[in-house]
Amino acid sequence: MGLEVSQLRHAWHIQGRTIYALLVRDLMMRYGRDNIGFVWVILEPMILTVGVMIVWSAMGHSSRGIKVVELVLTGYMPLTMWRHLTGPVVGMFRANVGVLFHRRITLVDLVVARQALEIIATTTALLVVYAVLLIAGFIDPLHRLDLILLGWLMMAWIGAVFGAMLAAFTEKHEVAERFIQPLQYLNVPISGSFFLVDWMPDWAQQLILLHPLVHCFEVFRAGYFGDAIVTHYNLPYFFTCAFLFTFIGIRWVQKVREHVRLV
Image 1 (cartoon, rainbow, N blue to C red):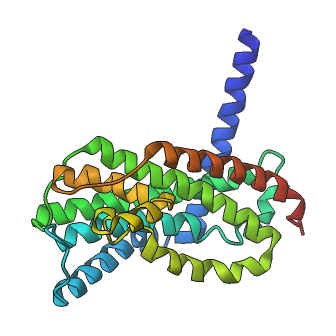
Image 2 (image 1 turned 90 degrees about the vertical axis):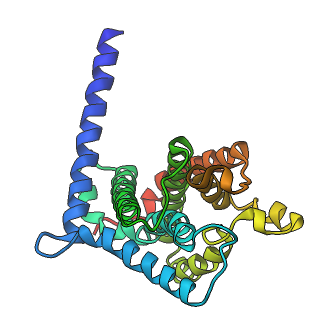
């Protein structure tokens, strides 16, 4: 028994080192050493969030009793995480085919390293954007840290596994790559990023809550606004969807190995 535990611990140590090496490799390849690199991950959501805030304010956009800046912050930052977890993964296996010659590296390792990097990057961006806006006095302090963390981790989980599904599916069906970007744009209006479920009529609430992402935004906003708003979410439904996507994602990544050409 002691030997098995020791072997398992050694295997996990090797796996951790492999994923860490892939993470550092992705970081250097994507952001480089000689420019602003990783800082752009923080600047991008800051610039776009401020841009949306300015436009909405200039148009007199109504946020129904809550600050526009807070509505945009709680909508755009989780959406940024989703975009980063499900966008760059398209064609990922083909782009990294060279490292698969190493015996210890698997497709699952590539997915875990890439998604871990995106989660770290967008989490850093969230902390910086929140701190800057809070210090500047544009937003109020959050109410419940536990729900904020839960909503953020829910988005990280479902975004990571859905990204794995997209990576595997587009590897096997290259024509599907053409449809990913349009579908991402179509997803934004129904994702819950820029509206609250409570603003909708009852029949529309039941329909929109079938979308798993809506629950992530509602939990995140429940933590940020507290009792100032009414939120609607179903955690058992979300976790059922997330577990299902996780199972499908792992299976698809494992099965697509035979379609990846080592040339």
